[in-house]
Image (cartoon, rainbow, N blue to C red; front, side, top):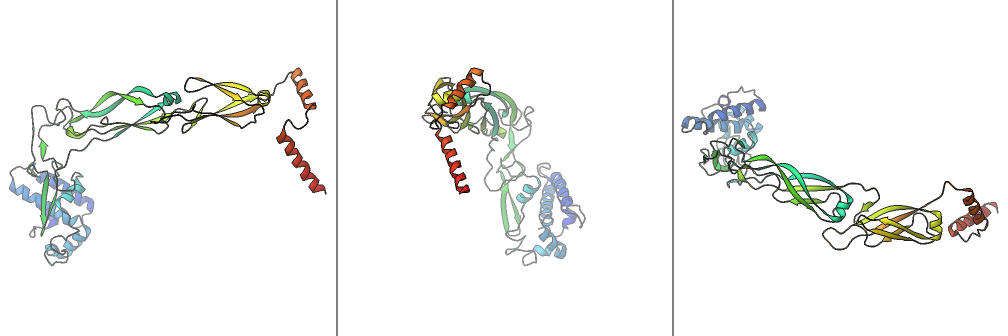
Amino acid sequence: MSAEIDYYELLEIERTADDKVIKSSFRRLAMRFHPDKNPGDDEAEARFKQINEAYACLSDPQKRAAYDRFGHAAFQQGGPGAGGGGGFGGGEFGDLGDIFDTIFGNARRGGERQQARRGADLRYDMEITLEDAFHGKATEISVEVSQKCEPCNGSGATPGTATRRCNMCAGHGKVRAQQGFFMVERACPTCHGRGEVIESPCRNCRGEGRVDTPQRLEVEIPPGVDNGTRIRLAGKGEGGPRGAPAGDLYIFLHVKPHKVFERDGTTLLTHAPISFTTAALGGSIDLPGVDGAKHVIEIPAGIQSGKQLRKRGAGMPVLQGRGAGDLVIEILVETPTKLSARQRELLREFQGSETGDECPQTKGFFDRIRDAWNDLTE
């Protein structure tokens, strides 16, 4: 430990400095004395380690309080701030990797060399018709995604140049920091665990190894899809940095409302108004389906409004399965509002000939009303 140098002096701050000032000063000094900016300068490297040690202490409220009270003695073996084994205390020790993880957000936990990050998954929303959902559809979409940079072949380096070994970790992709009796290993904050750095970044991709590129993709929509159905195009998402694998593209389907049919799973529903004479005498109606065929719906005599008729197998196909749902038609009996004199005459003639047996529900209702009235008057 740098027992002879005051931590506040190392970070060039006042003893009353707050966390924001401490972090800002550390960032500035760490960048100035970083070994990659001072190759071969042992003095800069030593200063770099000292300011990291100072920040590890002053960025932790408990360690800072102990240091303010006891100085460096607080962290010597047996001191008030020491843990069970000395140093900054076992479980609460903030090592070099933790510092860079907090300040620069680049350190990765673990001792293995970091693998190239896979590209991000992307989402595309597509609107289709109910007919498209029934039959399925092959279509194309246009998207702009990050793809491998062609000039550098995804390496991120200017063509004709190469990466070099990272000076910070000596190409291992990880660094070690010792405090007291502890040695902690973290991903290198300079090369982000890759073990190598780019000296001359590609101008086309600025060292990322990928560029935004418009592309057209073929999409196969299977029969039977519904709202929220997700289609995955593997490897068509955002390209990974420096030649890493691309993510996936997910297409979310949205089915437009239909003029005639509503959908409930594989069942298609519609409402069919019919005249009261058709309801009384029976008949049939022709209904065009989303499959393009004409469906003849037989209307039984005496059907009531609200009755549902079912056409088996005329609904939506089962997604990635066999068979289809049903077509359900709800009957709405329509009462005429405009009658000719002759029609009125015929209806009055029919009314005069009614015996009550023609409309059993009506007869039963009024019978119950009569019985209830008699009970009240008795």
